[in-house]
Amino acid sequence: MIKLKIKSGDIVRVIAGDHKGTEGKVLRVDREKNKAIVEGANLVSKHTKPSAKNPQGGIVKKEAPIHISNLSLIDPKTKEATKTGSKIEGDKKVRFAKKSNQVL
Image: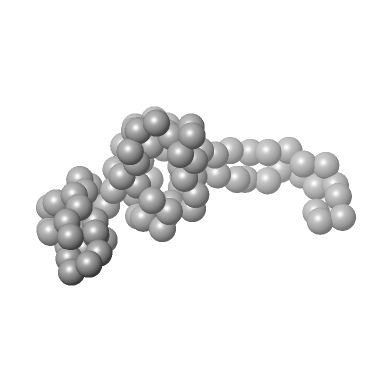
């Protein structure tokens, strides 16, 4: 298993695939499969039967997982793709954006 630099709550940009250029917030990360679900990216259509929860049924759009290698973290200051680093501030280990040196 590789070390993941992207965590839930991060703002990322899709850098490869059909949804290239789409930005969104990471909702969930699957460490076993190295995939993440990004809000508003990689939407797929799912056909659903009518049920008590959804009495109408029909076609529902939902987010599908994207491989971590196709995502790039967005620097909150410059709004550009950046790499991350880690450093110790006080007693805590924090992540920072390498372009702007801002703590994430």
